Image 1 (cartoon, rainbow, N blue to C red):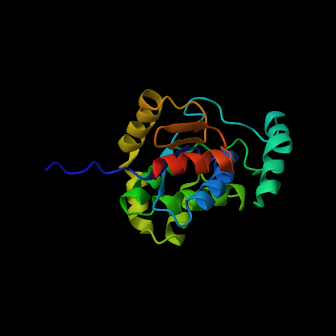
Image 2: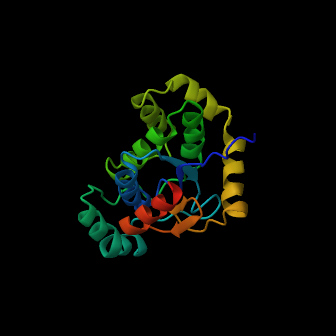
Length: 203
């Protein structure tokens, strides 16, 4: 008798910690999976990897997109969010190396949520190693163990492999990119789309 094929019940979310729409999408996803046998799996995608310049608050783009799209959506969803004043915006490679460490310890979801909150709700520089160590400490990770991992680039290769998967296998170009079973949405999906995709996944 052949074993039955196990259905992978998860939502995959490609994110970058400097994308406000990732924080906004997370609330919709969290509400949709409440009470369901589904987990949210985060995967990294750097919007502006080195040496691509990161965005500056002083330039026109950031304030404009926040006024036009981020703040209205945040108000509709009831999320407290503000345009960080850190300029230029931090790179997220080290934050994602810390995420890989957190994933290994079973706290990847908690780390991702805390990091998004640190940047968009507490105006903290998530490119600063000390900030990342404090985030880790707050969610129950071993601060000194993470510091050693970041100092030695222990998770750099794992992060680069994750980026290659995003680019070559899943063809990610925007964040959030949400994958639920065979369904995929590039951007902030509607509640209706998420629920329909979950219904298909849980059949």
